[in-house]
Image 1 (tube, helix red, strand yellow):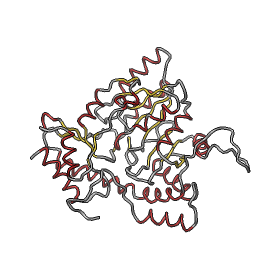
Image 2: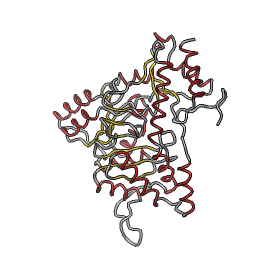
Image 3: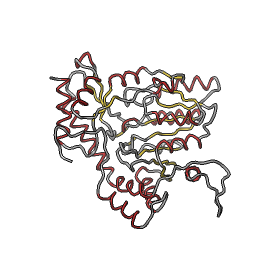
Image 4: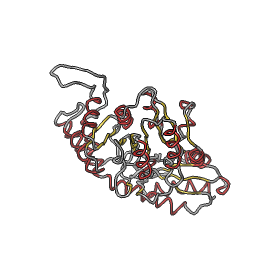
Length: 380
């Protein structure tokens, strides 16, 4: 792909190398094309080693992993689950699909993630009424961990099951450890726009071996051990294919390089745009290392003289993909009746927030073109 002024620059495209091709070719050469196989086993083991989990199950998507995490946490009809409001819809939709009700918690500005202070107030009130939620889905947004020390403490104190949605945060760290390993379970996504991809796929991790074995069974149509097809419960077709796991193995081997590249992208953007009036980048919280899966910033229209959407549209006109920050779940029509704790911070971040192209394969000419397009609007 050549760098020119007409070339489309995507927000976060896949970054594929030779290792992925070798593993996929091996799958074809050995005729391991069906779901499961040696690449799946190896991918699970290698992923566990990278994130520091004891057990893992490779699945068809991060959403599938979250669905199973919630089901195995006992979430069902009539239950309530707390979840960050500033996130993608997949963090909340499995809650409703299981018949439960989401309760959305606002963000704090230090990391843009779930606010532990609002969570503490909510759990204190609910404990007094003997109406504690069944689980909490803590999202690690855009490559940055939530304040896990505070969140873990609250979940333990009130006996609320903690599930970490680390779909966007592979390669990040919290006090030197990977996200996804602090709760009962953690989920990751390998969608085509993530920092590593399997085209479509996800991973469920936990230190509880029995829990992961339950995930594997449910994800394989809940087939009982028998020479015929025996089913004593209903399951799902959620397992990852051997071919896609081969892609994942190649991607995982270069994850550290990809994180270094996305962090370099951020530094280039920060140096070029950070001094502009009204421009403020998503901070890196003191408790961890931001993977900068996406470089995000906010625009103060009064100081910048232009709003977020004007900048985004100007970039789109130059064939550069940029997107608003996630629209909070409590503002989504599908969740209009859900209970929400706060919401003002998330609404402000959505109203002023912009995500810039951040892929690990971005070239210097592409970065220069993006910066030029941005500065032409904010600092003409």
